[in-house]
Structures are given as C-alpha cells and as structure tokens.
Image (cartoon, rainbow, N blue to C red; front, side, top):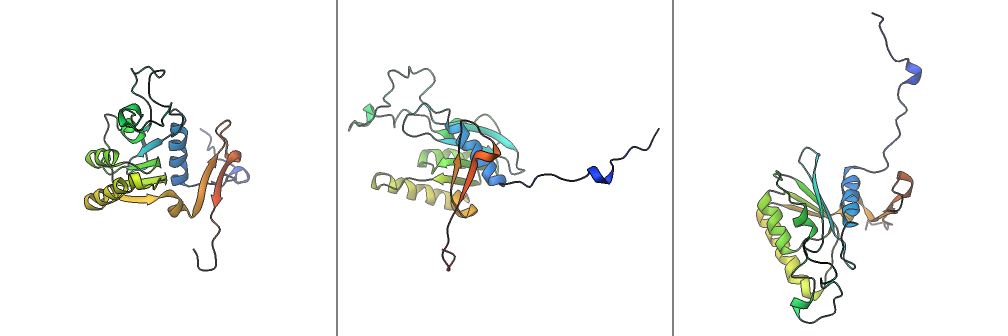
Length: 193
C-alpha cells in the first residue's frame, strides 16, 4: 500500500473565528426566541453542558393547546388574569426537557424571573448568562430575589455584555451568515470604563 500524505502546500488555511463560544450559544438563544408567539417580548434560552455540548433550547409561548386567538397577548389590562403574565410559558422553563442539566450553563436573552431561577437551580444549572434585563419598580424585588437565590445556591450569573466587553449582539435573522452577524464593541474611556 502506498504511503499517502497531504502535501505541505495544502495544509492549514483555516479561517479565524469571529466569535467565541459565548457568542455562539447566545446566538442560538436569540434564534430560539424567534419561535415565540408573544408579540412584545421574545425570550430564548439555550442550555449547554459543562463539556460545552448543546443540551436543549426553549422560547416563551402560550400553552400549546390554548388557541392563540383567545390568548391575552394584547396587554394593557390592570387585572392580572386579563394579561399574558400568569399564563405564558417562559423560555427557560420551556428549555428544561427530560435531560440532565447538572453543572450546565443557560444562555438566555432576558434576565430570568424567580420562578425560572428556582427551576434552573433545582435542575442543576450552575451558570446563567443573560443578554438583557428589565429593571422596573414592579420587578425590582423579583430581580433581587433571583440574585439572592443564585448566590445562596452557588449559581454564577453574568451579563453577556460584561463578559464579552460589548454593547450588544446584532443579528440579521433573515439570512444568518457570518457576514451579517455584528458584535457591537463597547467604546471605553481611558479608565477602561
């Protein structure tokens, strides 16, 4: 048998990656959020094992058997039962399938609520990377509760923008290619702020 080998002139030449693992998993969470039928808040979550393997994804939506024409998506009601909030399934919960989440990381497009945080902790999630958060007076206490739970249970919680030193992740979802994914760099002053 001949001793086949690749000629040196053809070796190498791989393209340099433009984004890292955190970018990749957060983009999957963003793509998952596109499946949401919520017209005002689209949330996606992506779970990754401690070995860096994909586990599952989820997105917020109305319960599957609820006719979307009768679901209270319109908002504006003062009575809680006339709003989507007590009924909608959150992306983090939707992503928790019948799998092992021990020591996993959840990449999520919106800071989790206390109910989602409890479920993630209970299933063994050890790190949460969130893209955005809403800090209004109505949810300030819920955010504080989540941070307390995460701290007490040893769950690391970080903002994606902080770990990447960027202002955002912009993706043109009509044609997702490496050319139309932009990582928006944060402009820093001389103090590194």
